[in-house]
Image 1 (cartoon, rainbow, N blue to C red):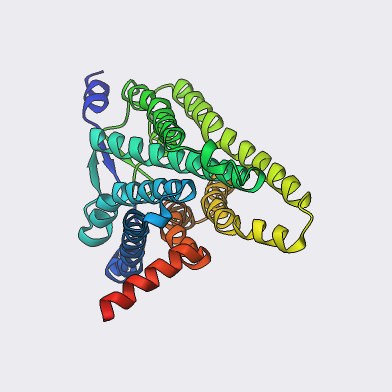
Image 2: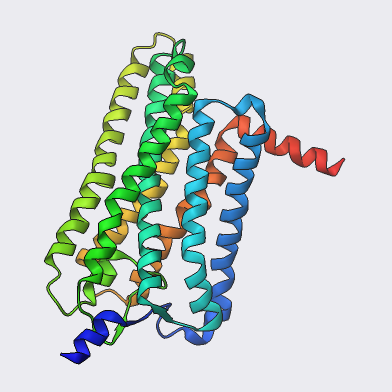
Length: 313
């Protein structure tokens, strides 16, 4: 009994990088941290451009700022343990530190899902009610949406840590990834996990599950609105304003679905495949979102090029 009491209070957790490739971590870490560097620089650039250009102080770009802040938060949450594993071969993480990282990873993931939904609503209002767009999405409304998004994520994930702390663990527990995820922590417990498992499932359904359904509904409404526009040129122009957002949605949901599928049906797959999919899920959206919006959004692209030209002069 004393062993379980000790392991419940002070269990050790070991993170996992790419098993069998430890001797090549120095080489493997280069593209990983290039992705981190690009993600952080790209999202900071988006925030700087929107902050310093008065013409971009519009609802669409405020939501884009929320997305960039979320991506920055997600990158900075996973960066410490990725550094620890791939640069210093230090795998151990304390239980409390693991819970904190898990909490923020899931909070930022849920926030990103909700921000993408808010951006879909923004596009729907802009296309359906262009003359009332600014009157509907006022600064007060946008602030309210942002607070509701953050509040939902913080509240939904908060109980998960306490539920996990009630469980018992082995003295030493090996995790599947170089960061802490709720579903991974649950697998290591030696006590009944059904309450935590059901709660985790309910959080996913009430956040990303609901958001994905509303996103689909939003685009059905957007498509219906676009098809009612008489001019073909105007229809194409309206749809073009949604391309960046559609890319961001696919970038977020495709790796998440892939990770869920491989966890459910890929038990015989190599552990490296599981780790790679988890890394793609957490690293690719923060990398691709600023790239997509910089390339596909003319206003952002023009301001970035303008800033670079000024620096050269």
